[in-house]
Amino acid sequence: MYAGANYLADLGEALEQLRLDLRAADAPIDLTEVVFVNDEARDDSDLVLAQLEENYSFANVITLSRNYGQHGATIAGILHTTGDWVVSLDEDLQHPPQLVPALLARAVADQLDVVYGYPEGRVHSAFRDWASRTAKRVIAKVSGADQLNLASSFRVMRGPIARAAASTASHETYLDAALSWFTTRAIRVEIDTTDPRVQAGEESGYSLKRLIGHARRALTSGDMRVLRLIGGVGIVGVTAAVILGVRLAILWATGDLNRDAVGWPSTFSALLFFGGILALQLMVLTEYAISSALHLRGKPAYFTVDRSRDTELAEHFAAHPPAGL
Image (cartoon, rainbow, N blue to C red; front, side, top):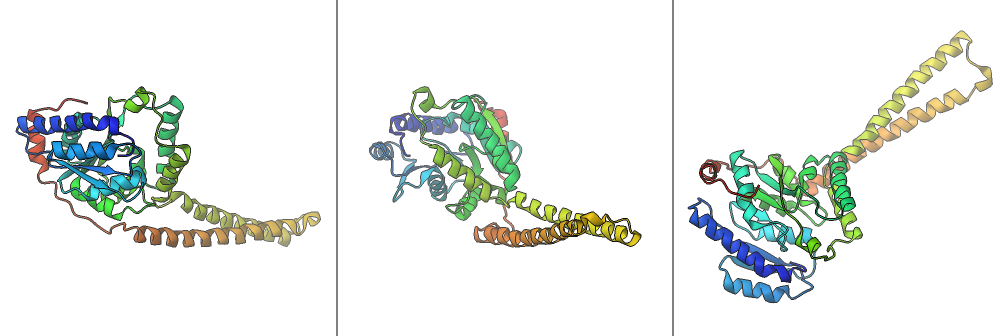
């Protein structure tokens, strides 16, 4: 919660309706808790949240000591959950709670661990939407965290995996990159939704500076696959230097070497060789740095998960198909 006081009452009603719908359908799952994270809201969200706690037994409000941004608030919220499944969603109804069962049904049907709900249409301006999608694709390829290409802030996550990823995600670790350390069973499902803030003509809470910060965090959260290209350049340089050196030796031995260019071929060959060696050394140092960074950030050697209860949920949703997708 940062600037969504005008939407919180409707959000509370939508969550209560979701809980009642699940119970009416006798679903083998229940909405047991909703964690509202007050990220030093700039409006009177704290007053509305206090009222929600009085009105709904599932409401649990936590207040951060200062504004940490959506990334930090999301991590805090996840770590205060206890459920088998965890959903992250914005407070402004951009992510309608009624779509949660459909995303969950997809997850248990295919025994997935993360399902992202991604808007199928335009969310912000055409340029901003294009820039966002392009940046995600490029960063996913460059960083080595391919799952970032799927990411959105509307997530249905298996609880143990969500909490494990959140516990390792530091201030500089992108949550979705951390999720990819624990599972690759993730997909993106397009949903029909719009941003109420955009429809109301409100400005986005994300400035260009904050968006660039998100991109930087996402870029450095992977294994920086692009840096390994340095080693490839080094190998090419050393190989070219060796070939050129052999060629020069043959020309010198046969007397065909151009005496007017003496010194330049050998200098160029030496530059290629030692430049390639330096590039290879830099690649080795980079590998050590990446390995150390991932270790410090808590990337696990392994993680266990229990998906045995998915069948029961899948059977329920097959008999009672949820609407929304």
